[in-house]
Length: 277
Image 1 (tube, rainbow, N blue to C red):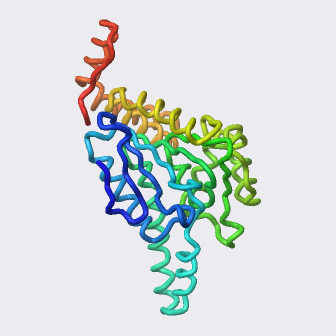
Image 2: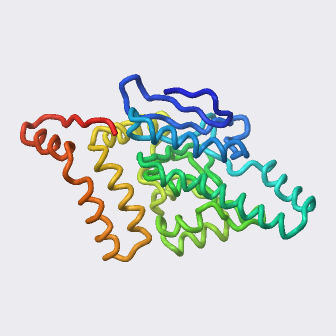
Image 3: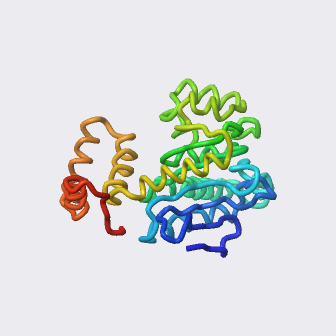
């Protein structure tokens, strides 16, 4: 499954028999800045990958020198330009709907049943941080550079960083990064817990991330999507609510051919073979 119909994205299969697919932000001439087209295409691409039974894991990366340099300034400029061309109350109501739609573009990462792994090189700025904080796993190169940039553009970040980042790096660290908009390295990102591992260069990262993704892809798809969903739901629940949610989830999917196959493979000391989802 390779799709060239997108203006801002590419979908590539790692290899013909692999269940790992690469979703690439593809505006290298603009540093992969997020355009209006991206906000339409990204959730559509994730939905198509989610529905495709050949897909078990999605690796998200950027073409060219950077992962993502943030929202395209032309898009921001069009928002402010349009402000004076309509009745104020109606324009502000429209603006709220547009912000909510852009938020949903990022939330589509969490709503994708399949795990989404961010592989970051170069710059990951502003909207790029919004996106990776919604991903399930994050890796980067030593040369990667991050910034919660919005305050430098007189904006309060509104696409998810302020809501997700504190749960990843801690409230105090998130506050400091968001208020200062300072740039920080891949090594600091790992110390903060934003990424799980730092690689020496892009080639090493791509190889390492592929190994992680293939490992996940070889496991029970029911167990993988259940683990992702339960963790995301439990993040916003009290302990007992989370326990009740996972009990309900497992009562629905625990008894499956995947469980029988996993037990059988373990007893026979062989690799498990699971049906596609």
